[in-house]
Length: 401
Image 1 (cartoon, rainbow, N blue to C red):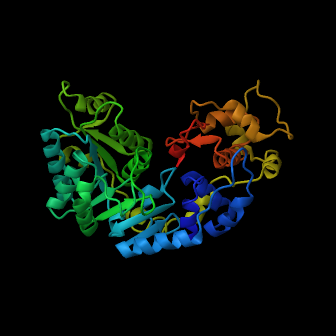
Image 2 (image 1 turned 60 degrees about the vertical axis):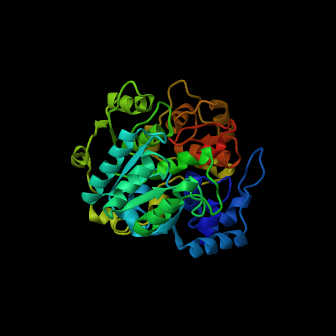
């Protein structure tokens, strides 16, 4: 666990890079040993935190009554494990078993209306009565109302937070966070002592979207963080529900737009339950321990290779991958002396593009492209965004994590 945490806390290593490194080297400890020797361009070597700092974080988390779950643990929540950018390490305060219980996310405006707060609270109470966990982000407004509604009937609720376990945010929700930890669970990716900043909240949002079977939006302005959570839920294959609101209220324009785009109109729990497919016991009771191991899952990811190895592998990519990504007649013939990283940088811009598009437009195999992208991300030249697209780094590299 210490090596997994240390690798996850390395500044240049995001969730996808963490998985690729573990896939390549077989364990976080081996990946840590290899990381300083990996080629990087135009940037200092990855800054690996000291063993002492990780030990202090572990001791501090345990002192709070918390624990860690890594992607290598069988108790890691199965639904979250299956998203493409699953957090390598979760810090958990409370009962980690709650993370395996089927749940629904409820999110919405911080400056919510009285009617919105009342509806979110009553909806959460109904869902708790139905045996579902209520998942939200502990923010002011709709999030707080959802947690309180679940707790009202002694139901389970999970709070995904943007900062460290020791940094409740907002400050007035410190008591609510403590209550949730007693009755459910509080989870975060952030280390102890992390004060929430704007760039941390998309990562918090994906925890909500990834843990939930579906996500309910109660009041959301256009371009709000709430809509980011809804979009992530849709990307992860979850159902998206929205409560209709007055077209005269700007707080409802985003949620009403979700309804126009196909979200399920929701006024009560009965509108949600028929659309939720509960996972089978073998899928949810103990992660993937009854189906396939986590390392087997990682083995499907392309390995991280040096440029020389990548050039060699470009001659050996398998027939199926060649057919899937067959180059167009205008594509150049493979050049064994070409630099895949250089070619990718030439193809990329500050506008993100799907990795499949890159593979189709260059002369290298999928495994070589993904290995090169990983090295470019480590060097800070390329950013991987929440939806899996990639682009040149333009000062927003943190979004790749």
